[in-house]
Length: 178
Image (cartoon, rainbow, N blue to C red):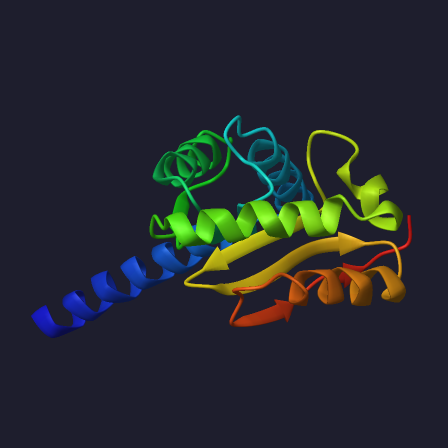
C-alpha cells in the first residue's frame, strides 16, 4: 500500500514538473524581443571599439555571449547589461579577454590605417560603430563584421595581409546588401 502511495506522489510530481516546463517555453515573440534587446545593449556599450568583437546566441531565455575584447571591463559590462534584460534567466559569458601586448597594439593601429585609410574603404570608417572588426592575438589577425560586396571583402583581406609583422589573417567578413 505504501509503495502505491509513493508511486502516486512521484507521478504527481513528475506531471507537475512537466507542466511547469511546458509553461516556461518561450514564445517566438519573446525570443525576438530578447534578440533585439541583446543586440541593442551590446552595441551601446561605451568602451566597445573596432578592436573588439562581440557575438551572441539566444536560446529561449538563455543568452550566450561570444567574441574577443581587449579590455576586461567590456566583458563584464556586456554580461551585466544583458543580465538586466527582462526575461533573460541565464547569461553564459564566453567572451575572451585578449592578453595585453604592445606588439599587437602596434599591429592594430597599422591594420586600422591600412584598411580604413584606403580610399575605396573609407566609407566604412563613417559613423561611430565600425562594421569591420580587427581582432589581433599574438600577431594573428581575424577580421569580422560586414561589408557591402565580395570585392570589398577581398580588398580588406589584401590590405590586412599587406601589413608587415602579421603571421596570419582569417577573413570572416560577411557580405550583406546595403
